[in-house]
Image 1 (cartoon, rainbow, N blue to C red):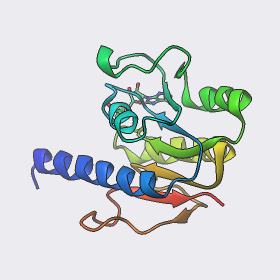
Image 2 (cartoon, rainbow, N blue to C red):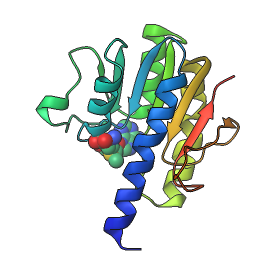
Image 3 (spheres, helix red, strand yellow):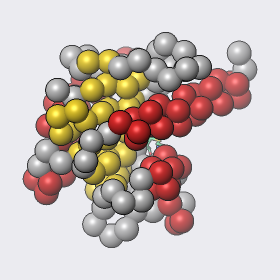
Length: 158
Ligand SMILES: C[S@@+](CC[C@H](N)C(=O)[O-])C[C@H]1O[C@@H](n2cnc3c(N)ncnc32)[C@H](O)[C@@H]1O
C-alpha cells in the first residue's frame, strides 16, 4: 500500500470512528489531544456545535480558522494539561480524541501508557476515547464497518 493510500485509510478511519463516538457520547465536553493543524478540532466543532470542546497541544500551530476560542486551548505537555483540565472541570468529558504519536511504538506505547490515568480521570461514566493507538485497561468497542482492526480504536469508560 502506498503511503498516500495509508494516510487516506487512517483519516477515513479517524472520521468514521469519531462519527460513531459522537453518536453515542453521553452529555459532557469533548477533548482533542493533539490540536496540530486543527483538522480534527474543526470536524468535532462542526459535528457537535453545542458542546464545549477543549484542545491540548504543546504548541499552537493550528490554522487560524481552526483555533479554539480563548480559554479552551491548553498549551503544554499532555500530562500536565490533563491535570490542569481536571482541576478546571473534573470528570466532565464525554469524548476524548487522542492524536499524539510519531508512529514509533518504542515512543508511542509508553506515552499512551503514561497518559491513560489522566484521560480516564476526565471521562464521565459511559464516556468514549477514540485513539490512533491501543490503550491498555479500557473496554474496546467494535469499529465501524470498513475500518480495519488496529487502524483506529474506540474505548468505553466505566
Ligand atoms: C498528529 S498531530 C495532531 C493532528 C490534529 N489532530 C489535526 O487533525 O490537525 C500531533 C500533535 O500533537 C502534539 N504533541 C505531540 N506530543 C505531545 C505531548 N506529549 N504533549 C502535547 N502535545 C503533543 C504535536 O505538537 C502535534 O501538533
